[in-house]
Image 1: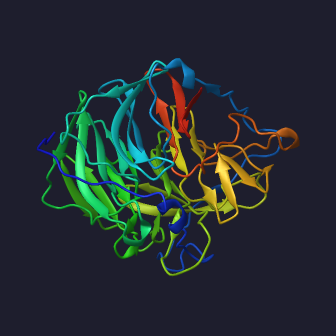
Image 2 (image 1 turned 90 degrees about the vertical axis):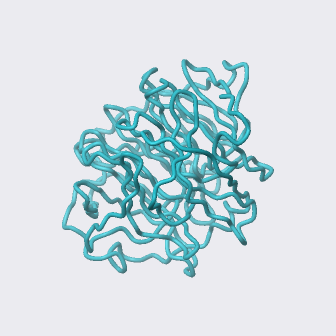
Length: 377
């Protein structure tokens, strides 16, 4: 694992509103190449939906807590045995640069000497690299006003309680809200898209052994987007990409497409009709995977709706619960009886870019939003 020195950065609250740049409702291949012919069910037959496990609020267990934020970077750190959270944006627009660990139901702040870690920022991309045995962090934004949002392209690794800045000879162009996941099948961290100085991107990058390299992925690629959810499904042995917001200059809507990545190539997932559910258009959702399930939660739908903990909210009505993506290749969700939400109650901040991670040491999902922490098996 390569390990050199530090650099500086940060982000903005207006970002969450002015980030509503977006795209028209377009077909998945209208500017993204010819999609690979690939389909699987977008739900399961009625009556066969999986029961959602109860959520537990563990906020008050810890003596100290990270302040309320969104747009933070979060990942399970297998080397240190805890969930790592870094940075984000506070409700009053302050960029944060603090590091926290969550282990055994408790939060602890990690003491990082001044200048020895990433600068304050939000919407950075973070995942765990099991080969380097370190958490990888890339980019983000360090400007609290969207008008001139500054994008970053620095690369950092975290292991054994310490941040180290890397200086690869080649790096992806500066961006924020890019999607990242470790592709265990192909043996590298995969970075896709993000918002660059030229608008939403559609490039794919691999990171391995301290080095970034651009991937040539053929003609069937996802459309340019940022704020898409992405995670590795261990059963399918594929990286799954869902949603996001696209093309600058178009007013509008989020994407609801699902893509899969394996062997250096993207394939578009065609949802078959006649099944119970598929994720709605959403921006700023997150994906986490346990050994048994890959779950998508959070995000916003258009200008009127937002999604709390995987629930789609519109005019005060609960529409859907978290979506599960299993190794069988099915998306499916559950409706709460009578519109009653199952799980944590609504929060005051939109659930864009919440923290959501599988805690392998403790065996549960950790959901962090609006200053509260929840766990579920």
